[in-house]
Image 1 (spheres, rainbow, N blue to C red):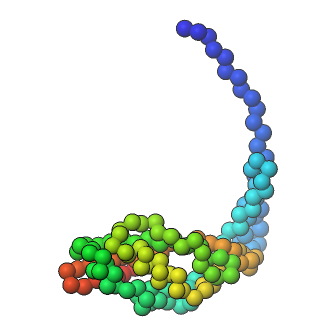
Image 2: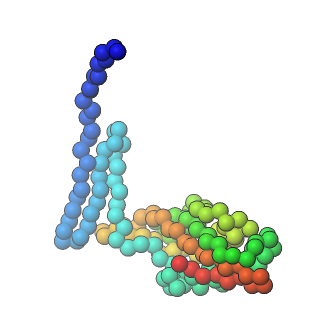
Image 3: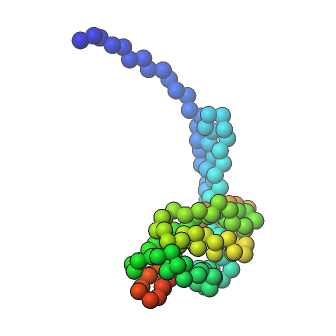
Length: 153
């Protein structure tokens, strides 16, 4: 058996810190990683569709074509479609994509519908600055032998 050496070199990591303003209940995260200054604002107010959650669900219900699963040959069952997107600081939707893969055109149909959405009210920090925020929306398709129902979680 040969003897080996382990060499330990010090690694310098720039300090990370939190700024807390307890009077405003505001937390901001700052840091330096490999020379890149990072600032992560914390959302105090999350993005919201006009009319809130109920308004968003009504929009989806009114615009999703429930005939799509039948047209694509979906078998009876329950399918959970998860779509993610970013609401930017102007309230516009970006980076719309699917986190599920139910098939039968369901993800594509919900994404088509999401793209029709009017701008949202964007997320805001405690200081009132508008910021980008990620959203996930879930649509549950219940495919029956002669009907399709949709509901939301």
